[in-house]
Length: 115
Length: 111
Image (tube, rainbow over all chains, first blue to last red; front, side, top):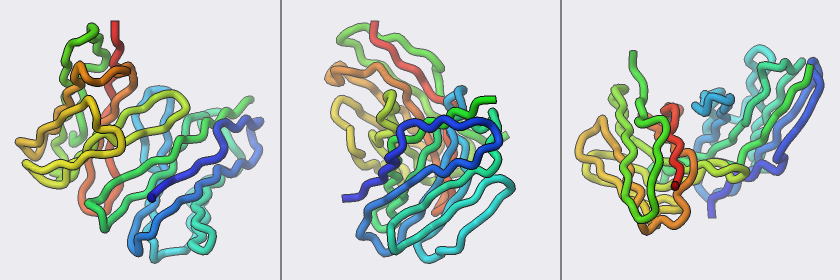
């Protein structure tokens, strides 16, 4: 079965703290893609990053960084020096290339950043 | 501007009624998806389509139907067989292995 698990239902931090959102996935596919999306209160999902199964390089984009470890099937997302505007629901997703590009999401993590 | 348009933003359905949610994209994307979002359950896949005139069931297709007669359009019908349709519905499209683009969603409420 293909599954994405985001074990943290909700996280609260104080502004300027660092926070890591966990994502663990299950798949037997050889080729797949992983994504992170942000959902602000408006409801529309905003794309943050894509990573394919053959690229385990970590990535940093401003205050955001991602750690992909195939050995542990994890694709964690870290926000450094969090800000109130980071408050949102964050989703991790898995796309199965070998099965018609089926795109499966985790349950999401609610991040609350307090000033 | 290119994007995905979902309409209506809010929809009210009476018990036993079928309703259709619209999803249109002008991004020339081949694949389109419908998701349902309930509090605490993330996004669950209802149906998806890779090409025109072809679509596959997702994880929760019962009580829903779709069509893909045009590349740009992927309407979702919530039938009376769907016993608990109150939810937030999101449509998405994607090209190849690139990221999916999402519409702004339709909030459906049974009255």
